[in-house]
Image (tube, rainbow, N blue to C red; front, side, top):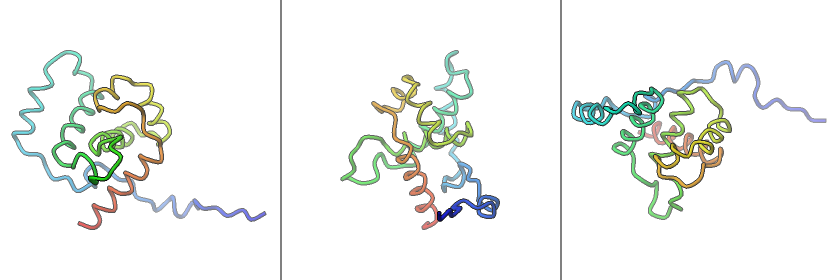
Length: 137
């Protein structure tokens, strides 16, 4: 049996942990903060997780194109995928766990304007593509 360890401890030990600032986003402007602060006035939005989701989604709507290409399938917008990946990092979940979280949360899916939860491989590919475009710039 050929038993190769693809994830050796030395590779895992030196792997980088990415934060949301590693995507090349610059500091937000004051107008955006004022607009966001005015939107978060109701009692329902007092939950920190809801605030994080709303902030990430609204900022990614400004910073990202809606779709990566005019020929894309248009199932999931880039801001929605970025919000899910940011939520994954924020909650310290795996791709499969965040996929289950999104599939059980109909409110989150309706807020992100997606009909069904994306597959974990879709999230992985999007995250990898975000890192590659960040490195190119």
